[in-house]
Image 1 (spheres, rainbow, N blue to C red):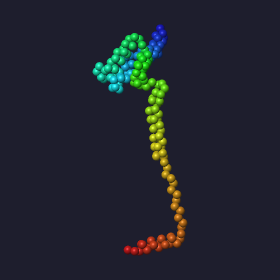
Image 2 (image 1 turned 180 degrees about the horizontal axis):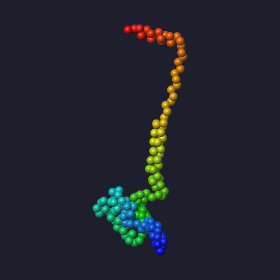
Image 3 (image 1 turned 135 degrees about the vertical axis):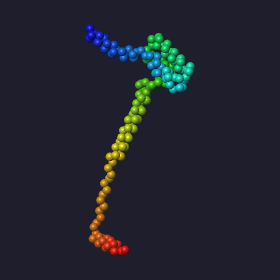
Image 4 (image 1 turned 120 degrees about the horizontal axis):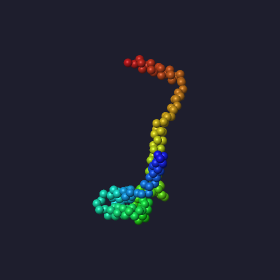
Length: 155
């Protein structure tokens, strides 16, 4: 009996994410859409009183949910009417992949470049200085010694 109850519980837990994904809430849909009044916020977050764009969208979302439409169908209807700009986040199709990946690629390349430059700066070895080769000339050495001796004698 306990095994059967445990299996039912596991089946419900495993099935729950699929059920939750199929039924979206009003707030989830409102957060997925950008308000068209120019505020730049989502339909749910729009702070304009009696917003000419957000309020009708909220009502339409509520009506569509009441009619039993799922999240994808509702978002597709708004996307068909307003275009991709209505979505608060770009989709992962076509050119939008580039929009998602470019900032991360730029950060990665910048970090790699910075690492390389810092590595060069910290691990740079100075070029060896070649020794100065001077020929030993006994005449010059004796002249130097004589002049130094003369300097020592002068007050």
